[in-house]
Length: 182
Ligand code: AMP
Image (tube, rainbow, N blue to C red; front, side, top):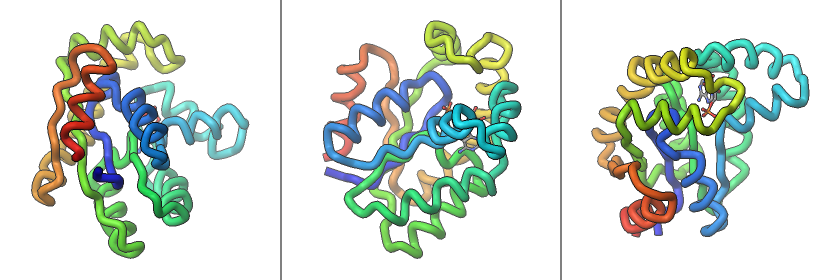
């Protein structure tokens, strides 16, 4: 099975749920920049205080801040990993390409989970996280389309993109993903 993976897709597509499931089943590192940032917020660090305000507006935190969080984590883990919520900009993707080249761990698959906008909004409203009110959700979707969706082409060019339909229940989606990673 492929074991150096990246989950891509709009907020609410189910990346986090599927990334946790797949990584615990296969003993891979699950690296969610959103979770790492929320941990900084909860711990009240100065980085967290800086990030919280940006996250609650549905904007992206700066590339340099996110990269500094990711770098240490990735280079110390060789069994395999699932990146979730990172990269979110072309600059982050290029920095990741460089980092992976340096540590000689190329990406084996980019799993793109696709779902209609209205379903995304409904799912996120059900989830009820602090940054999940309707205005912020719609803003996050807009930011996704502007800044993150261009990564689809970036990874398509590298020949690693695999699109998965994100509708249905958790198990159905998990089976689609697993079948694509053999
Ligand atoms: P998530 O849990 O992936 O939905 O992330 C929640 C929020 O954390 C996002 O809306 C961003 O504000 C911030 N965030 C998470 N990952 C990144 C990233 N790779 N680049 C910039 N901001 C991020």
